[in-house]
Amino acid sequence: MHAVISQLLINNLLKKLSIGELQMKLITFTVLAAMSTQATIAAPMSPMENYTATNVAGSEVSRIWEGMETDLKGKDCYRRAQIWAYDMHEQMNINSKKIFIHYTDKFNRELDQLGDIGWMKRKFFKAKKLDRRINKLVRTNITWDYHVAPMISVDGSDLVMDRYLELPYDAPKNYTAKQAWSLKAKPATPESWVEALTVRGELLWQARRASLLQDIKKAKKQSRFSSNNNDADDFMYSSNSESSEDKLKKLQATFKKLGMDKSDRIDIKCEKVDSIAEVDMQHDTAWCFYSVAPMYYYNEIDLRSLAYGDSQYNYVSAPPKSVQTEKNYQDGRSYIQTRFNQDELIDADKERKVHDDQY
Image (tube, rainbow, N blue to C red; front, side):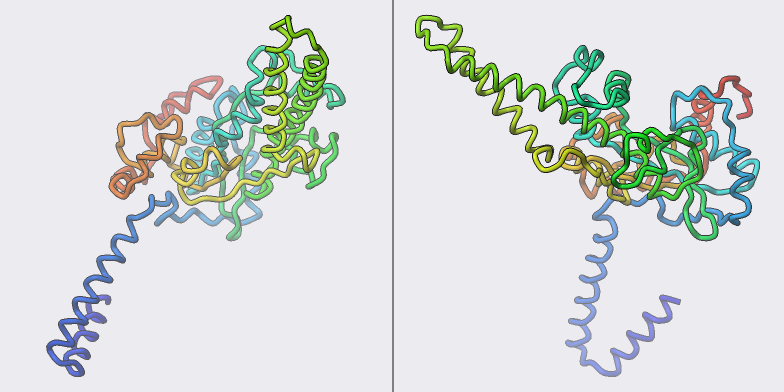
C-alpha cells in the first residue's frame, strides 16, 4: 500500500515539476526520510511496543484473583509476578502485563536509609512525637529498588493483580495514621497501586523529618555552648565550636532541600515512563517512577537489556549515563522478549514453598 502511494506521488511530481525541481524535491524527501529513521532510534524502545494484552471481562476478575497461587514464600516480588503471569497464560489463556514501580537512588538514600544516620541508628531508631508504628517501620524497613506485579486488561482498562502484598489502598491524600496502616490485598487500578506504594516513603519522610529536627535542636545547643565558652586556652572548645556550626548548617540545608521547612508531610508522586532508561537518567532528582511491560519481562535487568543492549554493565542497578547512546538503544532491540524465558521460570519457581517442577 505504501509503495503504491509513493509511486502515485512520484508520478504526480513528474507531471508538475521540471527535472531540476524534481531532483531538489527528491533530495529533500531523502533527507527527511533519513531524519525520520534516526528519530525512531534516538530513544530506547518501549517494552510495550507491538504488544497487546488479552481483554478480560469484568465478571472474570474475581475468578482470576481467587485462582492466583498464594502458597508462596513472600520473599521476591519479581518471582511471584512471573509465577502469576505464567499461570494466567497457561491456565486461563491470558496475556497479561507487568507493572513496575522504580524507586530511585534518592528514595533509597534519603528515605530507606534515612540519609547518613547509619545502620545502627536505624536499628534502634526512636524519634519523639512520632507514631510508634513509624518508628518500628524505620527499624524493620528494607530498601526496595523496585516492586513488580502482574496487570490485566479488564474491559479496556488496566487492573493490577498484586495478590500477595497488603497495601493502604484506602489512604486518601491527607490520610490519618489509622488509614495509613489499614492494609489489604485487592485488585487495583495502576494509579491506586502506585499511590499506595508511596505511603511507605511518605511515612519514612516523616521519620526523617523528626530525626532531623532532633539533630538540629541538639546541634544548636552544642553550638551555643561552644560559642559561650570563652576559654581561649582550651583548643578543644574552639575546635568544637567550628564543627558544631558546620554540622548545624549541614542539617538545616538537608532539612530545606527535602522540603521539610514548608510542611510536616509530603505527597510523593511517581511519574509514568516508557523505558527504564528515563528512570536511570533521574536517580538523583526524583523519588520514583513506574512503567509497564509485557508479561515476559522478569525484572529490571530485562528492562535494561531492552534499553541498552549488551553494554557490558551489570544491570542489577542503574548503569552510568554514558550508556545512553543511540548505538546502545538500537542494540537493545535485539533483546525484545516475545516468550517466557525458561531459565527465568525455573528461577521464579524458588518462590514457591513447594517446587512443582512444572517447567
